[in-house]
Length: 611
Image (cartoon, rainbow, N blue to C red):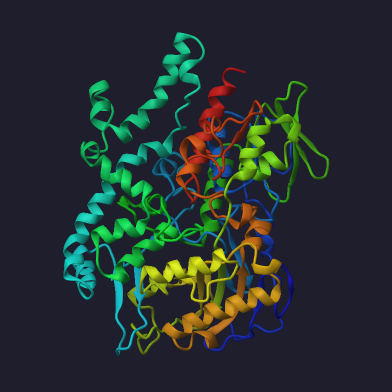
């Protein structure tokens, strides 16, 4: 994204800063990346070879993880990325000079702990900055000062905060946390294995059928840990309580999150704050059935052993992708930026035999793993006649609606909230490191914002998650300045009456978001130096996210596990022999998790040994 100062296709330069070291910035140009970002990384191969054991399409974090595991097992593997920077949606880009943004994804929690250790990511430069407290919800109300809700790791302090709104809710909150922890622990084993191959259970030799039975263990551990223990004492159960709690847990997975939260709590600010994790990234309301699973998906992770914790990556999310890339390169993987794949190379028998780049270069391989979305992989990179018609129809019908507009903002001072004014010296306060939830006084506001979007209109009072990573990572911005991430919804991909997200529509929506923030933190608008506006079409165009959907497809129950990306193809293998899906469109879904890349690599390695 490049252009002169002023309104851009997806960004806007507001002029020189006033309160920080960026005052000298004048006559700037929005730059796509510093020159160093155009190189994959120091360990990249100088020259692309014409033949490998495996090829990975796309250097998103899952693709990089897959390549690291393939190369770790001895398979010569390149990663081919079309953009100038590695990481897919997990990138750091200097959109406004001097300000380094986690341009798309912006927080870390879900990355599987095995990947940290097995790829030695800390040794390769990954540094995570945990947040405590982690959630701040200021209110707009007719009292001075307005109240706010601050949640952190200290349970006693969190209960004191909740007690402002309800003593009952404060008392029951630890029980709610334990209840959700039990369900998350039960589901955890399902993340690190391919879904059960139901077809294989009834096919092949007796030995093959017995081998297929092994895929049932994660599912048994999740649903019936007591039974799993009786069958095999070597399986560590996630807790015998799941068997007894199964009806309640089933309700969490299938009911609207508003119903679940109403059963536990009475205070609206608490319920709305918790509900944000159930709808974030989803074209869904708190009243949408099945929204409870999305909440679980966002509390499944951990940082430094603390379940459900989220943190910033030092250097931005691109630093995570670079650490994974270094881990892969250290084992011999070849990683290239600006190498766009045109199509998958197929043999006469329909088997994947490599890829063809847009410049016509052929790269042959025995395996091909695609980190691209299912839509790009199967509807663009493979001839339709090579795929079953039912499969193509299934991929075309995947719900990829996105409510998300991400706005990256450069500011010359910290926002000062009416509910928690800044200190005189302007230094960060504890709440500044949090995910700051705006327009979350009640779940009705979230539903209202959703309803407007379903009619083709951007929310007039959108749900806003505001993060300021430079509070814990000052190197992201010039001294005294900060980078602000605004994850906002709901904005439809297609506007009412056939309108498009042109420059005027983008800026009008961003202005309305800034007006909302101004109501909570007067002075925010005058602190803005520059902004980068990414609507759903922008997220699709830049990052290849189908429909702008950050998960490569909705995380509703009908698009998970057995059905992700399509029934009978949930185990990473595709209808095309030797072609595997390793991105967020595969099990277990979206988020910076790495599980799809790791799992797909293991499946592909198993097949490779039988070639």
